[in-house]
Length: 375
Image (cartoon, rainbow, N blue to C red):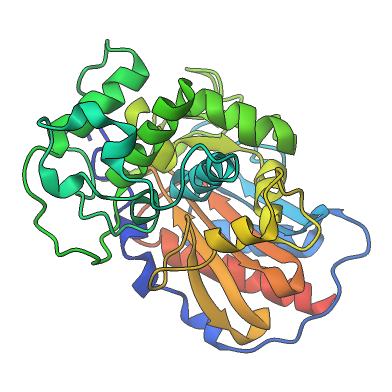
């Protein structure tokens, strides 16, 4: 990779057409384990998967609007090390960050600082003459639902590394929107760049960086004390899990992440418990950050199948609509499924990524649903 991860999230770009076949099978809902905490069944499922698939480590959980109900972990933090993966380790969420960025924008909409229809050029009028006019009218909601016609990724996410981060993102925006769009208006095209642009709009409106806004408006109010950005842990140490990529000799550990500029599209890490706190926004008793039901419903009302950081699908086991997303920075892989009518979410992450990661995580989600059904 040469120190760069410019083509990350290829799996998520295909997410809408790769919804797991398992979820076409109905299951019967039942109550969760009576005592929340470490689950023998989840741990056994993860141990079996880690051993069978030869992946470094995994963490998985079943949660409700009250928090994690059952959790398990298996494997190790770093190939070649002795530290075991545990239930409170930090997990890189990749593109599961997009739902968080969408909520951030929803808080600004609820305060009247912008609307879902607010255009790029309204917020950043100085872009006139610097970007192609076809991009002037793209709206916040088009950016969040991948229908803005912008490219999947910036040509170079790492450019202007010495520039202040908000200015760097704006410069990347300008450099990548100079030419006319090649996609038809209204067509779905998964775009990390689009989410960065939405982040730029939030930064201009508030004067704060996307990172500061996330801490102030999302992490702090929800009590997500572990949440931050980039590769988990202390640089050079295995006090948190490292990501892993496949090489000719097996797994190669990497404590690295995508460029800072890509933040709004996928650089958040946190514990599974804190991830569940965020997801509970769409569950019946979850904290709502001051957002009313109309605003929360907007975030899960899709254009096509994609809404504000969520793919929507109707599943019998969920008693109706389920929300899902996956995320990867090419060194981690995370997947979440949410069943609002059941007040349940099912979460899994592995500190590795290869062509099998989507299927492996999907299989664990299926086992979590069956564990929930069987208690």
